[in-house]
Length: 450
Picture (cartoon, rainbow, N blue to C red):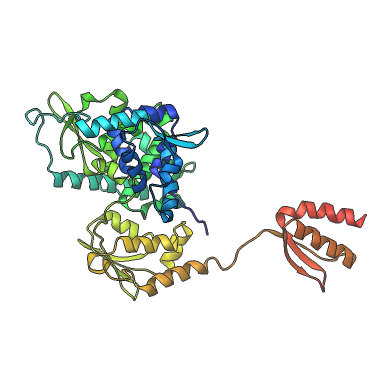
């Protein structure tokens, strides 16, 4: 059974992989400096604040005295992260010293002490038309995101026509969808796993993929990261003039509207964009520690499942690993069956991912129980997965009718040395070897016969 792991890369690892020049460009923006500071491990934040007004270098031995002996592992993790992000420059002369990045230090110092203007000012209410309420805006963002994911499951599932940009479709096709000649796109194993993740993880996966192929569209990765993090400092529900954006940013904002990060509106003279909570929470989600959302699933010990949701997307996701029996306006009723789980396993979804999804989305009435999903259900899901792993297929070749026992034993020794011996029968002089060493084994036996 295929085992695929996605989201193995943290967003800040992508930031750390930028060139030194691009990182220095990022740190010229005070808002980016604040977003980076938020993303750091707690101990790394402490080191940055302690060196806030120190312009010189600090010896590594002195910094080790800032933590207790049992915290040395966390100390090394914090230092490594700071060095990766070029927030610390490491100097090795007589002794190892660390110096805080001067550009980051000065910009963040000004930003925290004197404050500063927002990335751009909201438009006056007299110019804009009636703006949506925060509740309407949140409903719009959820609707856009669900429509986006329904498009991933099947283009026929979307309740209204969708015209996603080619940029976003490339993100899909890159890892979540596969397309063959004259066939409709299909979900890949990574795509099935993607649908079981929480919204923040899904959003950052799409953002990471979008950033990864930005250079194909002629957009610098540092500029895109800068604009995304800057967008998170806008106020949700406020209108911002599109004319304050560069041409590249205008093209990006249209892609972000597809995801529900912003809502675009047109007026008589001006056009504007309105950030949603998905956008303003971006910098808060960098550490992947988003607050627990309210769940909707109740699983019983008899494998019956009740999902209190009006979302069509939730229903389609549950179909990935369960049998949905019927759907009421606010309730989805189904069951976790052996057949439904086998289909999920064949598509690359693992038992642990299914169990994690059920636990993370447990209804508030059962979320506080230990466990929130019955133990017998979790154990059975794991057992059904293990059923598919009982037999491992290995291409092999079978050898018999050896001319002598010496040749047979020499062949066994040779196969064993090549790490290709799978089975041997000394009495009847038979053996099985891996297919990958078959040609070498044949040449070896020819030499023995001579």
